[in-house]
Length: 85
Image 1: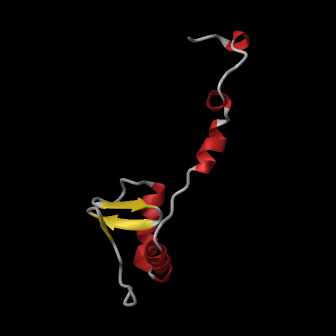
Image 2: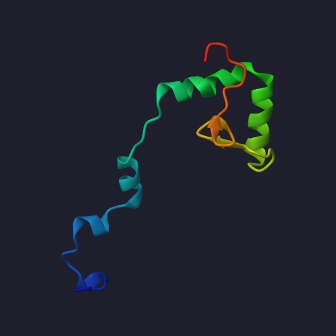
C-alpha cells in the first residue's frame, strides 16, 4: 500500500537510492577493433572532415552517421582508407 513521504518510515532501499549511483553501476564495453577503427580516423583528412561535419550537425551528410566515435555509411562501419584495417 502506498504511503506518502513521512508516513512511510520503512521504505525499501531501492526506492531511496540515488539514480546516478545506479547508472554508474551499469557499464558497457566496446570491442577493441571498434576503438582501432575510431583511432584510424586521425590519419585521414577525409575522415576528419566527416567527423567535424557530423559532430556539428548529425544530418549534415546524407547516409552518414556517427556512433561511439565510429563513422557509419548507410548503417555499415566506414573504414576510410586504412590499409591496416
